Length: 175
Ligand SMILES: [Cu+2]
Image 1 (tube, rainbow, N blue to C red):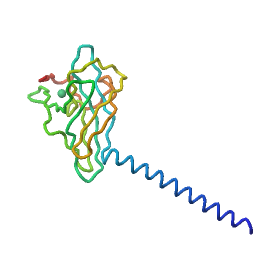
Image 2 (image 1 turned 45 degrees about the vertical axis):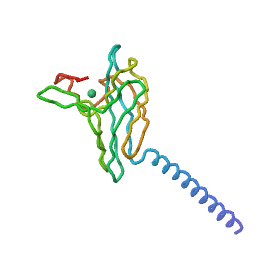
Image 3 (image 1 turned 90 degrees about the horizontal axis):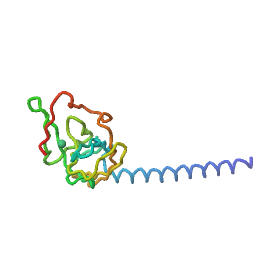
């Protein structure tokens, strides 16, 4: 019967450590949530460039698990002189890009995809050639979630998914 006490004690100690683990882990989770707000942002895929190319595009998806809509309002990148949010639209069979004024809404409990053929990040005045495999950093500015630094991977255009219109329509860029 004397073994009952240690067994009871060890169960109690065990419970205590489980609780301790859960609370520490839980706190870390909450902290990570606070850092990104209610937004879950994918890594950014950037089109690799050939030497001499001065502009390229970046793609990503943003999910919003919050109750309120947010808005991507600005983009910043050290490797480009100018970064903007663009949208490709099809006007009479010709794909055109335009600057999206006022940013892109990320609806509550929804998501937005910036993908080939539609919305994209536009990087102009590139300082170097962007080679496949390079990792860059892009800063996204949200109306509510604030500033968010995000990894950006340089990829072959063929490795970037989305609804590409390259083969069907002529591209025209106003910059
Ligand atoms: Cu563009």
